[in-house]
Image (tube, helix red, strand yellow):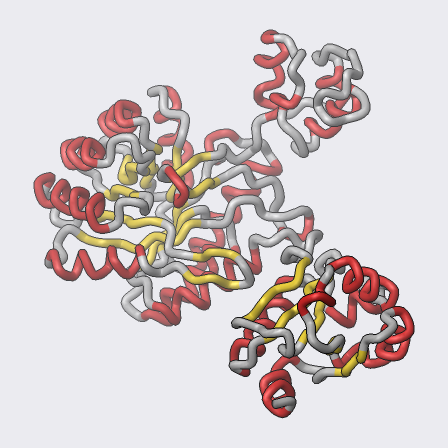
Length: 446
């Protein structure tokens, strides 16, 4: 049972030292009770208190890391049922299934496609996150060969090993030693042996149950065997079952603090029909999957799912922003056009993309508007003549320009006169209202 803020406060040192970043120990206790901070922020808490507060400070869904290095994936730690309540914390991982019954050339192709799947969208690197290696043949030797191939062809990608054979698991885990793989396939018949293999390799254990009742029994059994890190599969495969079971697990963990289900969830969206697979994978993204397994990493599918995941896992209370500065697009000379916009990520990438499409080298001033779009920032008083003039004046850009001309967005044409008053010697030109009008506008200027 989670402790209240007052109960936590009684176990704290009560020195009000502020080392935790909060003004008082009571404020820290309240934050801890709401799971908005962690116990390790208090350097003076006693070992006895740490033990008692461990359950209260731990997130309801256990944090787990898949893989190592720059491409490792963090899972779990989720605190809410709905994104608007606060935010979803760790984006789900997309994994591509590769069966050991495939020809070597086909397996290599899928690994290379996954490794090369990265795209840049509004400043974030999005990619297929992991390989799901399936012991479809049941042969430990073939599974070992596939694991070795993955470590060669896609050495940076995290790996999930799918097998119910403890011997096949042992060989493949040996090849991936130190890479924090997931060993998926622990069921009622092999739970003890698979738990031992996962513990020996310091891997996460994937529970493959037939239903929710069996899932709870297996997670309790694995925990009694000393396994701490798990990912859960209730056996759901149809869209309706996935929606039902994933929701049940998240609600049980968050609302009831039900420990047997307080782990990340793996969802199998595999379908022969690519469109249907994409729809089921999207359901997993929206409804609580930490890992979504698919057959293929096709580019059209990636773009749809990457965009959906990015939208779901951004903080709804904090707009996506880019750094305030003057960006050079192409190789602008002293006569190159000089434009300005706000630092809302979507605005910046749309505007900069259209400038690139024009093939006209430009300078683009991006002003901090707390991540608001042009019209919203203007209405909120964050994209005003005075602030624009101050930004331009402090930027030092005048020394790089042969003529002082600033192109402002067409939607804020009303600011042109006020900006000219505050920037003596500057000419203010009103640009297009929509970014897609920039190529024609820039080309027409010669």
